[in-house]
Image 1: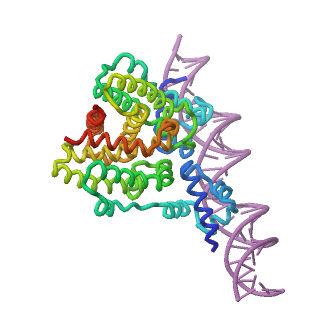
Image 2: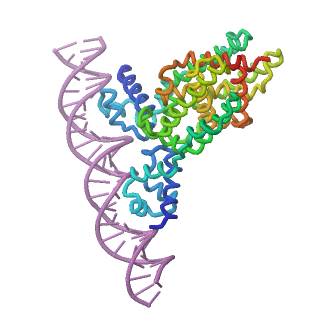
Length: 191
Length: 191
DNA sequence: GAATAGTGTTAGCGGATGCTAACATTTTAC
DNA sequence: GTAAAATGTTAGCATCCGCTAACACTATTC
């Protein structure tokens, strides 16, 4: 077992699966992209489905939202929302290929353990709690759940817009767009 | 030529292509979903690629952004942004299946005539112009291009969030989320 | 009720795909 | 330098997919 070889195969799989979706990628293509014989793929990974699953496992980044909320917030709305947004953007970016892979590979409304569902739902709960406490403190008036969903959607929107339509954001970098919008929202939400 | 039959086939194609992507759908599946013999498909549409293209043509909704900007705006920021957002949401929803189809069918960064690129880019230009004029009138201070990209991303984010992860928005309906966020943004952007 | 258009059925071709078997070659380890 | 481990090569099998051909059946039209 050569670690380097299996890495090459996993890299190539992830690249191709995220570009074209599971069904549209052939093991022959993966072999070529990895610079490896097709046989080698089957020797290491048994079959295509298994390769797919190991690739997901290999490249999944698991964010630590709980730690973020427990240790890194300062109870200033703009500062915290920006920190949360940035960390979520980081998560989305690191899971970019897996997310694309899942979107492109069959059923959208399945697998709650996929990063497409698991992390946003986790983050939503924490965010609602946070916003509830901020509301108690009088730092905002909005409905916390509506606001939480909005913040998640905003971040996902920037992420997908960047992924899909780079011409749209050509003259504008994401990071400043987001910090700008967070500032606007904070201002619009405070008193 | 029976119109009803070709409609059934087009409907089934769109349903399946948008669920699974072009390559993952077989003509046999389409035939079954349409309740029709596979042969009939080829009699009507020659080949699979052609069926795909006619399905896109059949179901594409072309928004009239120009008319919207020329006739329906009242130069009140919140009112106008809400109207623009709602119309864009409507466009996204009506093109929902085509958008999914394109996302799931191969290259993301291709075909500028796809509704994924064409309409957002068109809308962006009009929105930047509008915001520029509003800025001249003193109705906002932000950078118009950054704000325009943000508004588009926000809308696309709500749309995709709803499409992909309906549990996230379970207790919250999109429309009120959007009008709420538009209100917040307007407030945060004005003076 | 005969002619015609629309649809179904069956069989199959050529090519691709996932995957296996058997053997040859190269690389690594000691 | 030899044994063992890793990888390549070639051939091929079973299945599926897009698509065609030929013919049978049914509904519609006049």
